[in-house]
Image (spheres, rainbow, N blue to C red):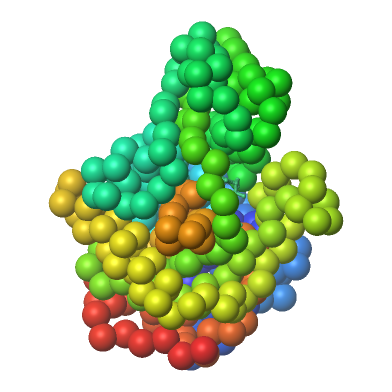
Length: 317
Ligand code: AMP
Ligand code: GLY
């Protein structure tokens, strides 16, 4: 098989490294890839245009494509490939909305009773600041759209909170913020493969998001990750039953079949696991910690996901 990995970071390098071990693979490609991936794959120059990449893949006879980052998913890369009859591991544009719009994700969680922080969505800075005065701190302020993991402010004083709201809403083209209840607990990530029907959770992992030692400093896209995170089996079952199943079934009830990997960023609170965010892809850097532990063939699994044949699949670690 000819397999293409889309992206250029550490996560995509981990995906390639794992794919290279599959007996199903004859040739690997990375678009755009990076210099470190060159020993594993042919690097394909790519400017981010999803339709152009799908045309290239069709011409080259790519059998399966694995998508690393969120931006092309939100752009509709899966739709572009599927339209040409190409197999792709990654959700469609509609399904990727669970990451592309935090306001959409929160609404979905509300509709299907998925535990998460209480929240309000604002576009008007005046209303947002009024609400802030009313509820006070601590509060969490999030850019509703994609922000590479840097769109969140956890504010413990009103000044910081107001500044975050102004920064997000005062630009010329406006914006949308989600303001939500501050949750306390330990954070963990649960990723799961799904073909829209079967849900296969991977080992839990833990990301470390703040820039400085001792959880000081601003949020980043991720400073490093640990896997496996020793999550209690009962908690993991709750994550499956209360979070992953209602998410995938809820999307399906709304006509959206989610195929790919789904990322649940969780706060393990006293009342149980609650969702901080959903992502439509592998975590970066969680993938780098997790994929080396996986014994099963990633390419075979990705094929089964893309073809809707995940039922009966098992993972070994
Ligand atoms: P997100 O991009 O939504 O995962 O948020 C980035 C980080 O902000 C998370 O990994 C948490 O550390 C923190 N965070 C997000 N939402 C909350 C919340 N409701 N309560 C406490 N911390 C949060
Ligand atoms: N490591 C956080 C993320 O991938 O969103």
